Amino acid sequence: MTKTKVAIIGAGPSGLLLGQLLTKAGIDNVILERKSGEYVLSRIRAGVLEQGTVDLIRESGAGARMDADGLIHTGTDFSFQGEHYHLDLEKYSGGKQVVVYGQTEVTRDLMAERKKAGDVTIYEAANVQLHDIESDNPYVTYEHQDENLRLDCDYVAGCDGFHGVSRKSIPKTELEEYEKVYPFGWLGLMSDTPPVNDELVYCAHERGFALCSMRSATRSRYYLQVPNTDTIEDWSEEKFWEELKRRIPKEMAERLVTGPALEMSIAPLRSYVCETMQYGKLFLLGDSAHIVPPTGAKGLNLAASDVETAYRLFVKIYQEGRTDLIPRYQEVCLARVWKSVRFSWWMTMLLHRFPSSSRFDFRVQQAEFDYFINSEAGKSNIAENYVGLSLEKLE
Image (cartoon, rainbow, N blue to C red; front, side, top):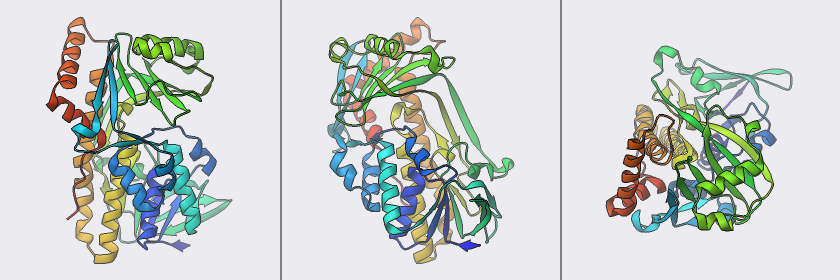
């Protein structure tokens, strides 16, 4: 049996970032991850970091490579039916920016810092179970290398994603959940080709949505809206590139550099919120508590805001004895969660073609786009949400 202050379930970016911040604050923590480190690094995820996420990674001490290799974006682009529009994020958000830096690289950097600090991460921890989380003496059991082990702790941070054990450890009668499932998914392709544009391009087209993104100056990531009945076998690389060219502005299609796919996959889209983000000594963070469509680039950033709130709370608890602030965790997180869920839902509704949409719906969609992209107030609205809303303080 071992003992720690905070048991962190999940070694994705949110678990690793929380662990790194707690270590720097002198708060002991252990991370349990059911997969291998190599598997965690193989997961392809988002790459747009809000200003607040960038600042938090720097505060954790894991920002050197991000600052050296990350691409600073002061704007983003939109296309509606082939017409190209630029949005100056810096101008309309009061000087804020975003940084394009892959989630895999964030994870890699945090892993390296944790290893350097000598902190404990147990990979391939099987059959993880949470016990007595509503008591003053919670603990976690797990299996590792054919041993049955126990980890006693003061608190548990559930960073193990939508399908993880953390949320499932809360009694169903205590869960307050909301969900919206969208009738399409995103087919993504990554290639070692130069991005077609210096900034991201969100494309609304009668054939469906497309996104031109990147991971670096030499690695591109493209997405197509596809029916949720499609499978990866329905799409060849050639078919993907041809369809992408149809949906993006003509001048971009003409200069698009195609190449072999490093990875192709289809991700379903859903909005999900579990409002029970704190139960007893358990705190839910990131995808274990909420899922947003990737349209607003909010998934990782929303997880980072949970991490910041949890980290500030644990510092208050261990340095000032402020256990009275525990109920504030859920309150502070949810205020930002629902605003980000709204923005991601709105971007999804604005830019995608829905199977049930009529000609009337498309014209209203076009009118809404015209208003927001040609109005000073509209552009400020998009920019403010895109770069990230401010986080409420715990006090």
